[in-house]
Image 1 (cartoon, rainbow over the protein chains, first blue to last red):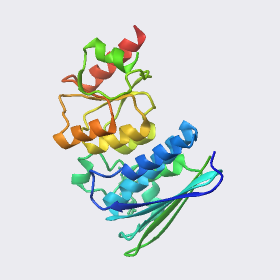
Image 2 (image 1 turned 90 degrees about the vertical axis):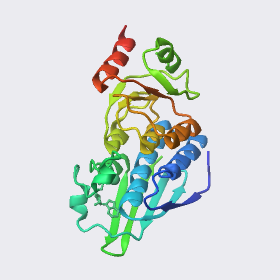
Image 3 (image 1 turned 90 degrees about the horizontal axis):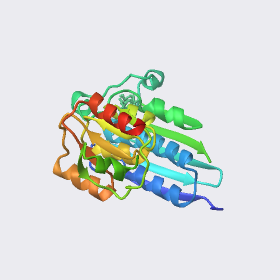
Amino acid sequence: MLNDELHLSYQILGDDFTRAGEASSDVKHKLKMMGISPETVRRVAIAMYEGEINMVIHADGGTIDVIISPSEVKLILKDKGPGIADIELAMQEGYSTAPDNIRSLGFGAGMGLSNMKKYTDEMDIETELGVGTTVTMTIKI
Amino acid sequence: MTVQELINKGKFKPINIGSNLDQQIAEPFCCDLLSIAMGKAPSGSAWVTVMGNINTLAVAALTDVACIILAEGVMFDDATLEKAKSQDITVFGTDEHIFDAALAIHNFLHE
Ligand SMILES: Nc1ncnc2c1ncn2[C@@H]1O[C@H](COP(=O)(O)OP(=O)(O)OP(=O)(O)O)[C@@H](O)[C@H]1O
Ligand SMILES: [Mg+2]
């Protein structure tokens, strides 16, 4: 088991679908190697991927910091995208502003933020229009 | 039924064979919207879909499905096929409808 905190950092590129999900995959593998339970690893992987792909689609990329401690995994996703006008609306299942070309790839069900909420113990969104969005999620181990 | 046993049935055309040949297939799962699949796909399931792009692979890898079954004659492009190889994800193809492909999996699991 790990005793200290482990910090990981990822740069996410906007509109790059060939590499989208690689950061989440990497974290998933690292957590697996640490012997963290498959159910916890799955929750982290789902929450992080949804956040990662949202930054790719909606925010022209950003950064993800992952802090793994013996008791929890913290995910901090920061972007300089357009921000979210109405968080409550955005959180609703089925709400999506994804354009047609993105929907044709299978996105746009409007389930990403709900998945993030559902699979994490804590989730906080800070956003400012025209400045960017920071999503912080915690998953207890 | 393991992934190898599904290959042996000869029902679906192997498009990429990963190293998870001994993994048990738990159940079929049908969905074409990625964030629904992300939230709902059971690990170990055979995911039947017509959404055949690179993001399908990311969702499959993160949810630990046993394999992807591309229905309705859907095929990956070359770049996606390469990614399936490098990510070690088992993928089959079929011309059947989603329902018929999933029903076949269901029947194999209950025969
Ligand atoms: N990082 C972000 N920056 C700006 N807007 C965002 C961001 N994340 C989400 N949004 C907004 O919130 C909406 C809902 O997000 P959510 O992830 O739930 O659905 P979606 O991405 O549209 O579709 P999917 O079901 O494929 O995830 C988005 O359509 C978008 O308008
Ligand atoms: Mg989303």
